[in-house]
Image 1 (cartoon, rainbow, N blue to C red):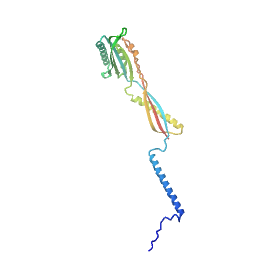
Image 2: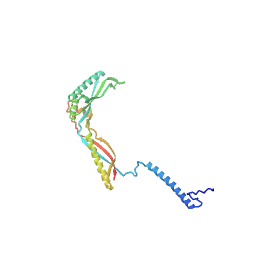
Image 3: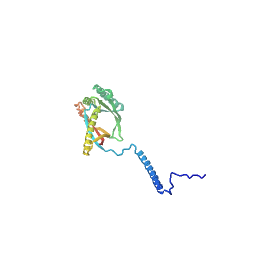
Image 4: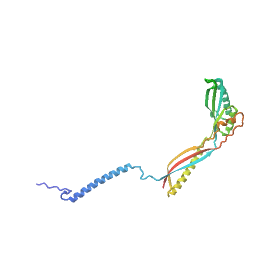
Length: 261
């Protein structure tokens, strides 16, 4: 029995050239579409988490200042003594410094606020002869006094003059806790920045949105000081100098970036 010839779903290209051409075109189109979809998928993966467009922003600055009366003071008191020998110079200096320490404590200054900040022993020379000749010794000792009550400053300086202090310097008037004054200055700086941002945004027909970034820096005015050159006025029983406490200024500068909407 003769084998029946099997028929195929696909016509032979020779018998139906138009169908074959359309099938080839569809196949090519399908391959191109597949590659396009694969490339699109990779692009989308690369852009995961990336915004489609950078949001519009505006950056402004503001400065705030606030003042507070100092509630603490600090001063350096130095005594210089000389002697023919190092022991003599040291003994003389120690006697004077011990008297100064006792006086400070009698004014109500606790031991924790009395600190020796310098002690120096050196030889003194006669330079009128050659070679220079050692003629004695000199001791300089400095005491840093911290006053938790600024009203003590005048009394401390007066006592220093009475007890032979040879140099008074670096009186610093400070605020023990600057938390509130810095907070007040910060709030003022932020308010100024917000007003500026709202004004600029309004001019562009927009409104400010949320804060994108915030930076700040703090500073202040130099502390008042009592010049060492004025120390002579406190010597020899002269009237004690009056320390003007004044006020210390804290400054906060802010830079804020807002989104626009």
